[in-house]
Image (cartoon, rainbow, N blue to C red; front, side, top):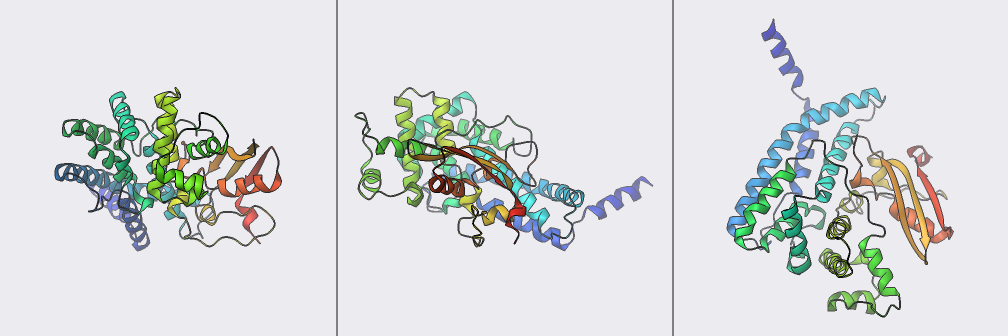
Length: 348
């Protein structure tokens, strides 16, 4: 009898063709965030060590994905969404994307934080990742390690291994979003007539002060350089290192709206703030609070829910509604307001 139970369980655990397709999709997309471009200038030893580290991590997470997918199938049944064929895929994908985001925001031990801060503040070349900016999660970390003396790299790789081990496990809640974000704080300062307005690197000065470009239109490398510049200024102004590093991590976070930018058609306008198509695809809902202060609009509170993400903040998805919230702030001129986002509002 025990043997039959064993075998029956094993047979039942074999995914059907649809599940196999979903798992292949999930694994392929996750692997992209751990690629190291051949053009990324890494010493051979570091590249080999980093590749081995990511391979071990992907093997562990890939082994967990069938259980995560099965969990979302149960959630699908419980929520009465059996007719939505791709619900388990997008719910599991949301969980994976949020693990990526939580990992990007999580601080390491004291030595790791001190070393990371020093590299960011002193190595602009770490912004050159030679990769699709939607998938530089791992490359950005290894590029920073490349800037260190060889003797310091093993300890940093060990710290990276420890942080990767937290995937799929309970972890401390991430620090709050900085308010404002570094790019917004920098823009406000540059727009002011403050006498102590700091000098910018020539490339950034040209784009911000001469061409009047918006940060969102910057090349990814230039966005990274602005984040580095703001971190250095923050430290010079006496901001606590942990707060400065947290702001940098949020400022450079690869959010879901960045990963999927332009991939889905916008919904037809109906007089309401537009519901982001990617939010519809992942069944994201929630509320945002916008504020206009000193003629600058910002999002000061986000409460978002996403199927597949339970017990932790969906940080990868928390900026999904920022763009329409900011647009509403500019159009309405209200000093402070709340927008509630419900999928039912997208129905004709």
